[in-house]
Image (cartoon, rainbow, N blue to C red; front, side):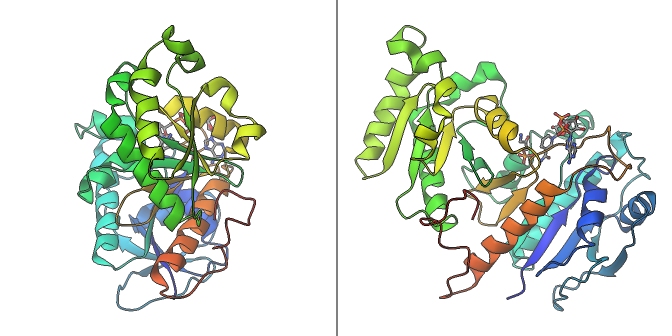
Length: 345
Ligand SMILES: NC(=O)C1=CN([C@@H]2O[C@H](COP(=O)(O)OP(=O)(O)OC[C@H]3O[C@@H](n4cnc5c(N)ncnc54)[C@H](O)[C@@H]3O)[C@@H](O)[C@H]2O)C=CC1
Ligand SMILES: NCC(=O)COP(=O)(O)O
């Protein structure tokens, strides 16, 4: 099968459009379909002095990727965009690209969705409540819960809470929430990452995982009992471990994923190790969605100097996940993870 990827370049003033233009220069064993304004893509290609030929996307006519070409599902911007300059008038355009690309996947016109970075603040400034792609696609796909996981070849980190102010984190970590997140992570590790009996390392919330209740009780009251219940299913769940000492080979070598309680507990570690090579994956959606590990980098936009490594990894992962999910009775090459060393498939 020829995987067809719906790709949203994200914030037009950011680096997303030029990263996509640069990646289009390479060979891809897939069809790449940009859900974007064709004028934006042409302008950004000219700005970085890179050729691009655009073709109208036709869901009925698969077109294998050719270097310097892109299929496009045109979505018009409200206003011409300048690199590095946010424009609140284009916020609705950004959201439209996400909605159309998501719907194309739900209809079965595309096999996976790969997103470039959006500027969450400008979307909110436009009066559109938006905390992230993760929550947006959860709502659009009408599922009750999804999980954000970032993965590199060395490490996978999933989050119990995502884009939430720190002062709301503790109250959000209930037994129900933690159970649901662990279930989604466990199932995704089995289905999409080839871990037959996933080993999950769970972090505590408080310093020293609560120091026996002297530095917070969430571990004793919520996390430990929840993990004990889940272990009755035969699941391999380690923890809750103190987050400051958990990220060492001794523990990581024995786990397929780390489950962190909140965004800035887990992601700085992963990004310190793998920034520019990691992929953000939304688990629990009915569609495949991967994304970059970085933001809009307005300071670099239009210069052609931003690193496209993470965007490339997001495309590769979307292709391999599509092949795995959409090819019946065929074991693709990447499906030997129990024996492989890397954390991304
Ligand atoms: N997937 C997404 O849509 C994401 C969006 N964001 C959004 O991006 C906006 C800016 O966020 P920041 O925290 O400033 O993060 P950022 O990732 O945009 O920038 C942080 C630093 O990393 C550098 N950087 C980022 N991507 C790079 C690349 N590909 N190559 C070379 N250098 C790169 C930037 O120049 C900057 O110095 C925010 O609105 C945030 O919400 C942030 C993370 C992910
Ligand atoms: N730190 C990850 C991030 O902010 C991207 O989140 P999302 O927009 O993919 O939900």
